[in-house]
Image (cartoon, rainbow, N blue to C red; front, side, top):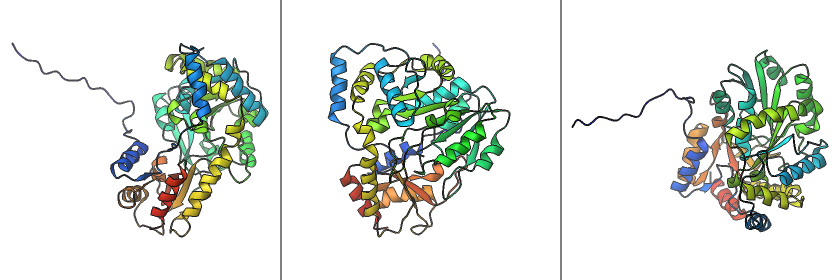
Amino acid sequence: MHCKTIVTPTFPSKLPHVGTTIFTVMSALAAEHRAVNLGQGFPDFGCDPKLLDAVDQAMRAGHNQYPPMAGWPALREAVAAKIEALHGRRYDAGSELTITAGATQAILTAILATVHQGDEVIVLDPCYDSYVPNIELAGGVAVRVPLTPGSFRPDFARIAAAITPRTRLLIINSPHNPSATIWTDAEMRELEALLAPTNVLLISDEVYEHMVYDGAQHLSSARYPGLAERAFIVSSFGKTYHVTGWKVGTVAAPAALTAEFRKVHQFNVFTVNTPMQAGLAQYMQDPAPYLNLSAFYQAKRDLFVGGLQGSRLKLLPTAGTYFLCADISSVSELNEAEFCQWLVKEVGVAAIPLSAFYGDGFDQRVVRFCFAKKDETLVEAAARLRKL
């Protein structure tokens, strides 16, 4: 008998330039070197026990089978009420709100639903790492427009110049990961005016909506009629309630956009785990947890910033999110990626290079720290960083 050599068939990769994400790499390095992990954006503390109780009660009440494809009705109603209370626009829970398997799935689904082969999608660099692979999976072409280096403000002249007859979609993110900036009312209105004469759709990534500081207010695209009428507005229960591993998010969009979104959603994940949705619906009856979230994280930001006084890091302003960026120019001659490798191995703190969020690896000597951590974690990390 002759033994045949069995060979796995090869095929062209749909994402030939994609490897393991920087977040996974740095988290693995942090674990290997027992470093304080301020790299990947997730809390190291638990959620409110009342939320766990609500989910437990939902499971024991028998809510363990498929919910409606669009999401648990009471949760969609709660989200509609929250958006109306905070931003003044009423979305219909039946036809304009969808519960998703996290914000990342929401963004992918919106792109798959709208982007055709050869369509252009404008992204503003630096940007979250899923945007461009999502565009490529849909057969689209990512058009990268840089935010202004240093300030990370939108450059409307460059955005306008990037719009062509092939532009299907623009993706914005405020509060912004990784720069921790928030868009102003003037900027939102300028975007509204810029898009008014076009058919360009909008994804408004607002997962850090409840993390804005120093008395500022999150300005959702829902507040601006000219943006809301063309926008998929994405949010995340994981970010808001300290349960990133639950992977539950929302998309609010006009009925016509939602109908197309759900066509893809139903064949993508179909629906999202039932007891988490039912528990979240119950928990949302009290708005205090999300209304108080900015104060909660501002205290952590201020603790971390205070602990870094006396270090040679130059701290950039943090207006929103749970990230803090720092200029490393006075500390090291290394580039951002090399510095982050050195930092985790020699100082015992993990950070993320901002260059990882740019298509061309643009290096401006800035790294990102996550302060969604226990106070003692932040105190320890700051003590190590002051030695730089």
